[in-house]
Image 1 (cartoon, rainbow, N blue to C red):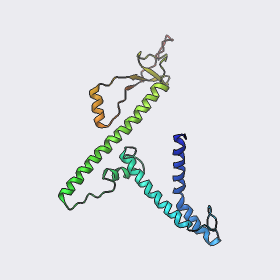
Image 2: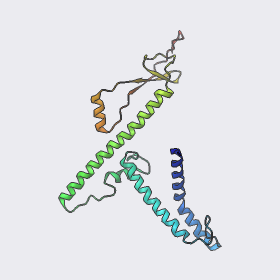
Image 3: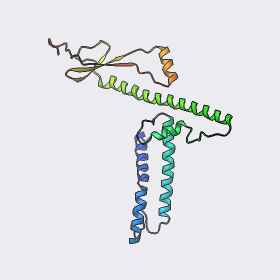
Image 4: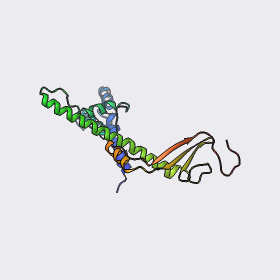
Length: 210
């Protein structure tokens, strides 16, 4: 079975090649008076420009749809550079117009848009909190030191930022009511507490502190 990264890299490469098609078309037009019919095609191949143009149109359509879908599931937000309008478009029902002549129909559309915006907000919260949960798990299990010489609580792990500052990572228990509240908001619980100490790092093995 092929790894996931193979498909992701292949897809990105194909998309990048298609994104360069406008420059390829311009270059073909410039070189056509000199007898160059194609840089990657044999002279007997036909409809090179038209097929390349159609592939580019399909790429634009695919990019718009994927951007709207990514905005709907929370990957893209209104603060995302260059792709922020996709979030606005997705929250408005995938380019659906808000202008309705029938008041009843307009009310239904507004309710649908409101529900869609709430769903997008929950998905955004879920995506962001899931990233933070994954990062917290990685820091606690792989980066933090459970046998640090720095003074820290027994159940905490330590990351030494520098000689004067440490970051303690402590597992916490989230009660069921708080978990239910976070679930309604679409957030993923993060059972870790991060606390920075910049008042001096004290070592057990030394008699001095700073």
